Image: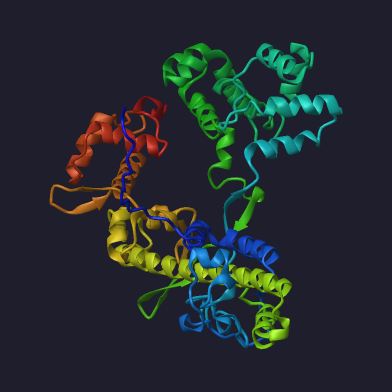
Length: 492
């Protein structure tokens, strides 16, 4: 029989306190969401209140209250060292807007349009209500729109959609009905949406344009010789359509102005009328040749501890007659709310301090760019570089750079824009991949369009510039910039 024995083990575990978890979560929140987060906390915690205009504010110093452990937070009044004075302050208004925009900085610089708004699918569904469809057909139209991909294509057949409606929605809809609704969706904005393939997408856009000789020829080119056109076999297109090279050139120019991916408008900077306003987290200015960064906190309210809650603890501590079991429970609740409010205020202060320190490190690393505004001045920089400069963990830098924006004299940029890989030139100079991409763009823009450069030729041209990179890297950069292969860049 095997005997049971006791064994003692010692383990080292790291557990985050509620205050630390809150600080981490607020660090990830961009400015345009922080205001909403503050309003939610104001509604949930009565011990926290917004400072009214004209009221004096006083900084809560670290010496004004003692931090409580997790156990103390659960049972604060059971601790014999419970310090009532830590919760009794004359006017607890924290100056949490650490290094906020100083006087003299234009407050109107806070609202910067950025790409954030309704989704592509939501925008299409909103147009359903502008049609003459009845309610059942509107439901079917929205179901069909749900099958349109991010590029704006409907790659499912009417038969497949009819089967799905029968199985998922219990609706018996004929293929003819579905085809009619698809045609109506293809009249929606943006032009070309709901097409089954590229050919149909381009034809839809051309047919929605005013009829001219050029658009008529462009339609004929796509209908008659789409395969040859897509392969840039322009001599064969001329023969099939019975036109000269000059006539074909005008038609090709008309086609190349069309959008091959209608849905891409919602991932770029097009359709500004659908965008909402996003507030940049930082503002970088040049003053007397020096770069100055400020946190954009213009729309955020100032917070303080509710004076009535502090007064309740003061009354309880000073009057033994009030120290009943019921009052003790009430005071315990008040202390918890005050602790929560202070944690929230401290978390915002810590967030602002971390953001500023990180942004200053980025500016120090990319100083030339912030002074000149040219991406050619960007240096290779990774998260670890900024972590080493600030002393923060890489995960902290990642949280700071995620969904944060900075307003500069040259435009608004996401913080991720400044993080880029690098390479070394033949002269031993370290350059960023973004610089190489810009050189590639300039080379392609100036190439002979009748004989565009292949990827192999691009490698040799870049080598002449001093950039020694492999062909696969050229392909990767070209695809990242959305530049097609040489065959598809060929013009008449």
